Length: 106
Image (cartoon, rainbow, N blue to C red; front, side):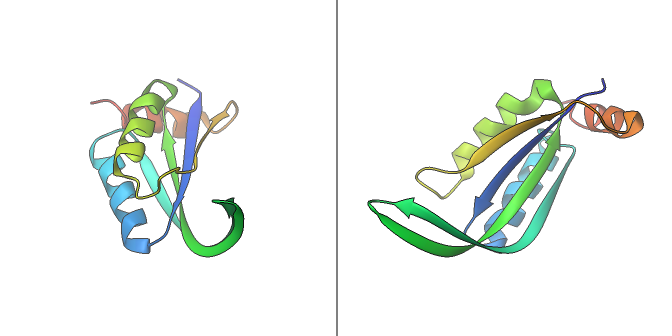
């Protein structure tokens, strides 16, 4: 398996980011998750522009685990309309890709 999927989201509290990361790894939907530092997000919401502080979470998973991971994130996410983005990585270190695949097997 030499492909990796990267799923990202943002949330409004570090504690929520940590919970999403831990749940995904414990449930083997992701081999690892990284919680990034605070970011300032500016976006349209309900007819106006808002700015808020958020924490990013980046999950590394196998392509065949993406749907389960997205479902888990969506079910636990506090936002009404969460940002959940999926990217495919087609080139990377083969041993890392194998590690991701191995650690996303239920």
